[in-house]
Figure 1 (spheres, rainbow, N blue to C red):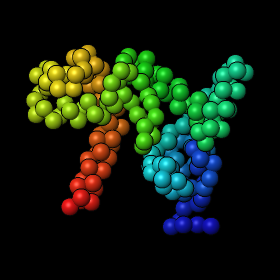
Figure 2: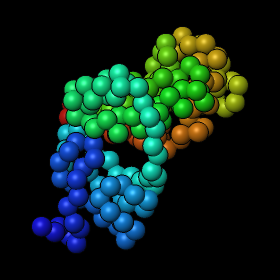
Figure 3: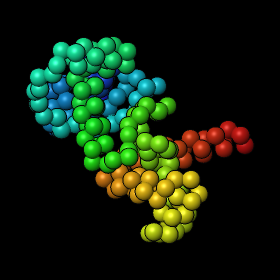
Figure 4: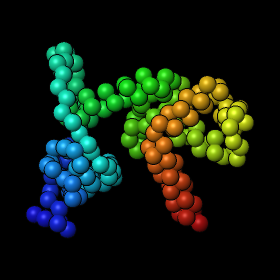
Length: 183
């Protein structure tokens, strides 16, 4: 079955069908240049991203593989997808001490280990209307964070601005929708 010229491909996250398209698509396994547009699970994910996947093999302890399989069964993700997520998040945490990844109502979020999500810190920083160290100091005072925590969030934002901007935009959209509903 075709839809708007696109062939159905397996959703690698949720093991159901989705539409894959784009002139650069090579196959259904997420190889380089594949554009995934999730349509299978509107309530769980509404994502669109370009995947430039490369093959990587690793030998893992049997206990690690067992835990990946059990976690995958609970979360609906296959063990390869989980392993990729854990590796990516682990590298990000090594690169940005003080930042962790955690589940949130809209998916995985980057946040301060002992504090709010990075997008919330960045929103507060912008709301100060200040720049540079003055903005950092004001954000720390207003949010009861340390200057180090604000700088940690800012460092993460500087490397992943699109990810954080998406969360900020999503929050603004939800706030606007709530205001309209109350009016």
